[in-house]
Length: 165
Image (cartoon, rainbow, N blue to C red; front, side, top):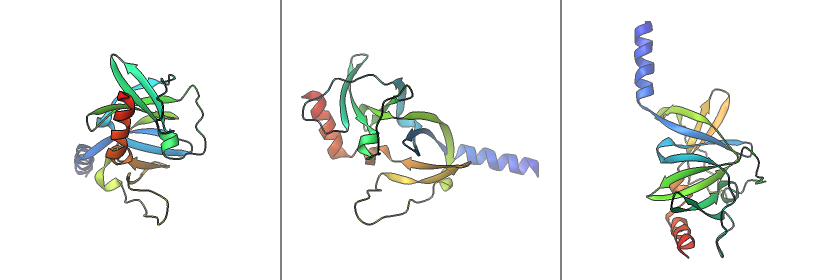
């Protein structure tokens, strides 16, 4: 019986994808770990003229100019205070390197596909198109984000034009 259980958990782990979890306000989010290049402490980026409010500016990351998107502003969190825990997650999204400002990084969790339940669909102004689903990790609720959808192609184009302006 134990060996069957061990085999089941091993196969479940093999089918699981890993997600980096981070906090924005009171909520905890997860993004595909394969999109993450590195995690850096927050440094004030160079502001870009005429960029949307959620684009904080750009930084020079070892010779690459990287746009910095504040996910707290993008997702309309109540407050976006910069603390010692504020970090920038450097992501590769659709071949574009960009930084995402978050309140804090928590950990990496492995979630099998069946653990991610569909997000409820709301009518009106709530845009849940970037939410892949909701997962329960122990006592925590985790909002699994499709980072490509969140930073849609039209906005990615905007980020690219802001960085090259």
